[in-house]
Length: 262
Ligand code: ZN
Ligand code: FE
Image 1 (cartoon, rainbow, N blue to C red):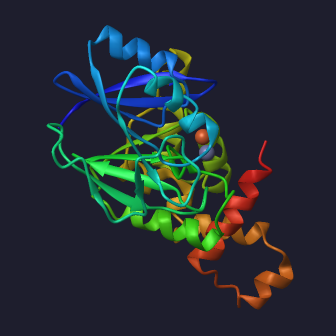
Image 2 (image 1 turned 30 degrees about the vertical axis):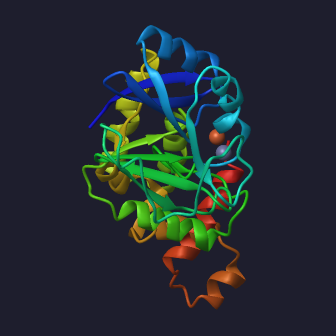
């Protein structure tokens, strides 16, 4: 196990720094300076960088960090990652000789075509795939791919702690309430989140149990979610489906609805 330090960066990104003894792994460094400050403050040497995907807000700080640290860079082989030394495709186990333990690499295409998640010591670093209360937009993959990726993440143990890369929870839950207003646990989560944000606190980590209970994108088989999706569909499409929606069609409808949601 390791300690986890949350480093706010850019507009609403979180960079997660994992500390074990005097060594660190950093996940999705979109900026170098706040990471550098944390390393100096805690007197840590940077052992590795884990990158979930190629977007600049997740890897813009790599070059800066490498000017002062000789760290391995792990990331998707299928994407363009700065100074990538350890290309990954999913299915690998990485850093087995780090004191903080090893990580399983999970291929989760959808937000981008090569997106990876890292899972170790009961913690899931999901980048822009699974968010607290939501999921990433589809920039590089199909709805089917994203649905399958989310399903595989949701199959990890309930108590898994979820560390995603953005503080989007409040806006995500506003959408979730539009989809499933009758979900009591969701309503409770909305209230807790409002209190936390008013105090300037982070809403992360979440847990997979909480996500499965309140995140509409993981609830494509819940009756109220299906009904809400059906109301958003073209009548002709709905009729073609025989008025019985496959979970993946529900997912794809929700994802499109969220794209235009105020
Ligand atoms: Zn992204
Ligand atoms: Fe991002």
